[in-house]
Length: 448
View 1: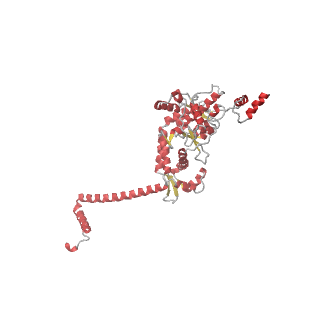
View 2: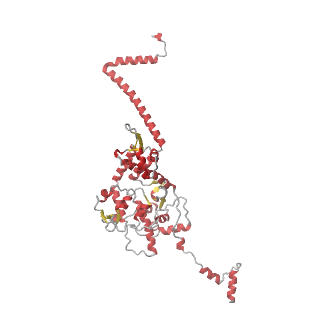
View 3: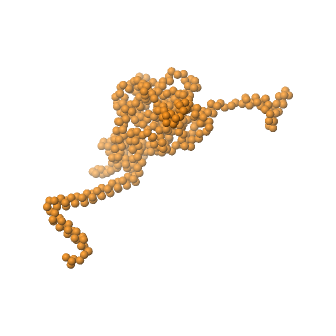
């Protein structure tokens, strides 16, 4: 008892520098934080804005409204519509009274307002540049139909059962480069690849892949790893299961976060095209692999799109059939170096997911014809009305100049032709008289 009091007094004395047994025992009994938690990627992270992607979505927001008006005008007879009726039909798009006309006037390179010569009523139609852009997009859509067939096959192969709802694919058809009539031009036209059927339990139409092709089971990230390995000479063990990570500017990367990302990059996972129904997924290691597999599935899903972007709401349609987590937004924010979520457009209610490695300074690194055709509409939208008025003035000035030149050339041809017909002396005499009058206008008349 006396020994215990001695030790306890030494323990309570702050000036004591000797390590007594009680101090040693208490230090060993204090709970320490596991290393796995300190080096794990945090679950909840704040979203860091990247202005390059947000500016892209600001242009996309205007383009989306312009497309609604284009579809409305093209659905009318003769592809023209009265401005008063346009203002009435634009209410379904959320426009108030007289807002549709003001909106159309902001884009003079896309919409043209003119007065009917007989009815004296204002009409609206698409400009010649807008029609050329629509035709260019249609041609690009038809030209890449074989690629669209391959995209749809790979999309079906990523699902658990090899089938997807027709309605979910129809909603996301523009992102995957499928035409509006893809049910007939793609699915029914290729019965060797797809099968369309009605489910008895849900009464919904489904698309099913006939046979999985092993040659299509290679992911886009695997090709990028091969490029990184061959060109940069990175160690094969470090790059075997890694993703390309580009953190947004202003993202704070600490020491433990860097270690956690390094450990996560070396973690093996199952391929998105591999069937995982036969694996035991109850262990912690299997759950970690499934989480990384979900990153690979979303990465491959974005790689199959035309513009390497898709809305979060449309990814959620494939959540059940592709084993994606329930809280998709928090899951994607956990990997901000691979994906970027933009909330611009539709008052923050729309979430657009970008594949960071596919963009550089707000532009697609490897553009395709369909992407370029859609960006052409964005260029027409960005031209200011002042620039449009200046172009029209230059065109009218050029026409006046051409009319003057054509009039002068026509007069010379008439004179020369008249000389060839034998009336050259009279014409020459008349020209000399005119020339003499002009040249002698300031001379003395008595000199003759």
